[in-house]
Length: 130
Image (cartoon, rainbow, N blue to C red):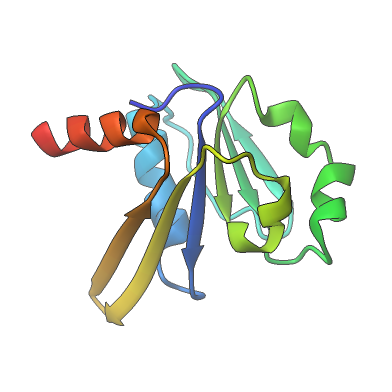
């Protein structure tokens, strides 16, 4: 249901499952590549029926680091998923789907969705009905 221009901001501790969650998004976008953590590359790009820019802000010193590697270049032509997005909040537009992944135990996660627009509300409602 996501389309280029949509931004998904992931929050969660190390090992919570942010990259695994992104793999699921990638499958939904028709991406067959192995989606890996962009912790060291900062941005991984994948082609599918809808292209994905998978970003990681964990190692950045600040938002300016993300700007310097071309963050803005990905905002319109890709579905953007950002791990550790809380580190670059100042760069994000208002209309973002925030997903917090909390570890309950080794095999259990709590996933909290936060959004402020009707746009993401419609996407979430459609997900619930499917």
